[in-house]
Image (cartoon, rainbow, N blue to C red; front, top):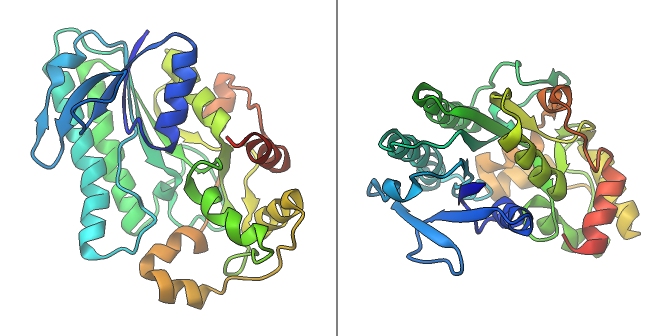
Length: 299
């Protein structure tokens, strides 16, 4: 199989590159860089609308993960960059695929559980409605752009990813230092739900989706056991053998990060209904074992 990946230097992209590469999959990096040795590279410039799409001729699959970091203060400029890096890049990708004579069989395009907004206590499956606000709006536009590939005869999957557990990046890496110092604890009320997934299951599920010919549309990329923030904090503290009782008050987060604080103060009780129905078996369905593994093995 020949697979093109955008965002290949990010947290998920790097892990996917390692996982697929170990299987002998031929990888193509879709990147802004001129080269990314030893990979074959296809260059693009989303801001200028430039894309060497012809170099994707004959690839079997595309995994589209590119996007500017969401965890930054949401200034007007930052919000535009967050949206454009997702929506415009996806539109550019689909237009490039339209020009190919031999198109890939499948596109797996990133999205996020932020699609649901603040879900409260509702269990959220792929059929649940979108929320309201900046992130839900971005996710809806992002997914709509990706699903245009279906009109080209390409099976398309959008992965609504939760909090990816890895020591190499993402939310967990940011949390580790204060928790190791005994300064960690619940955020805000601590009652908000946290949909998480081990980095190995993130890669495993994407690999599963590349092969599952009858699976398309939105797929929640989360473990089957979301937990509340207070439970996550308590479990992480227990695994690290540190107290986890110091709360981070909501007003402090709002003062420090503005609207971006919604990411941690709101939650989604998202579950992977379609993945489980399709037969994907999670290696790490429970939080404690997942945290123990990533921390022990520096994943």
